[in-house]
Image (cartoon, rainbow, N blue to C red):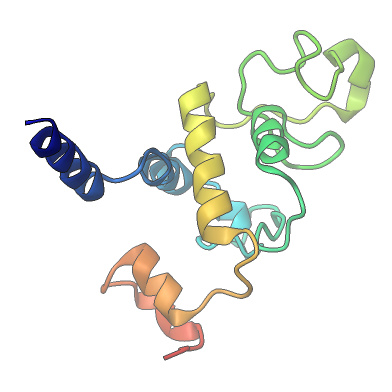
Length: 161
């Protein structure tokens, strides 16, 4: 009976997406719609924004930041740059780079178009670290995986297969 229970548990966990995959799926939704990260960073995090009027975002495929550092940048923005913050309490205390709004002065980033909760930040971090960091230039296959078979912009990327 114990063996049967273990078998069912193992089979169920093999079929269920991992927590990280679920977080990345949430991250993709946020990336594409809630805060429109793709406008500045591009659909594939490659620093070629999908909105030509938006500022140029960092190429996240080349970042050397850790997951914790990526989370801090999302929550706190980047002082002195156009990267906004998405934690509604940023700079109200020293949670961001150990500085308050008074300490950072004119270098404080602008607030993002929406505030994110921890779960949403974790989702973005999961997406960035699993799909972008260290991946090199985007490919046709990655684009199709990201957008599905109807991804019309994918033809501009090289095929690897």
